[in-house]
Length: 182
Image (spheres, rainbow, N blue to C red):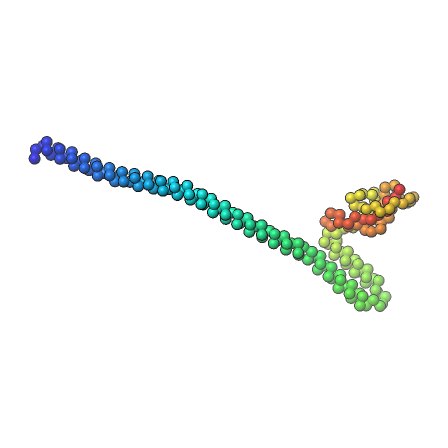
């Protein structure tokens, strides 16, 4: 073989090598493009599916939260007065004992003690009497059922209490029924 033939042979070999090297690159590029296309298609579908799944989970969590809060609210309403009822049961027991032993000197004294016990139990639960007699008439706290002429109190002052009024934790639950001086 001549030098010229050797050079040509080397050139052909190099071309073949280059073509062989380019084929895997082309195949890899084709595969990469296929993968990109698949990934693009998958990411276009998966995020929609993923977002939908997230939305459904969030909706289910919210529904469960609402149910749990509603149940807690019902339990709170059902057992809100439990403490005061326990206090009042003690008073009720004492009234029954007093009625069983109504004969005797200490009956009035015992009933007064029970009345004080009842007042203390209610006060402990946030009940307070609205001061009325001699106070300035306040339509927020007092319910005027009569007016009277009196020298004892100034005009616009409460001159008599017909029924006591009460607040529970600062909120008027029953206004005082009062007479107001003219």
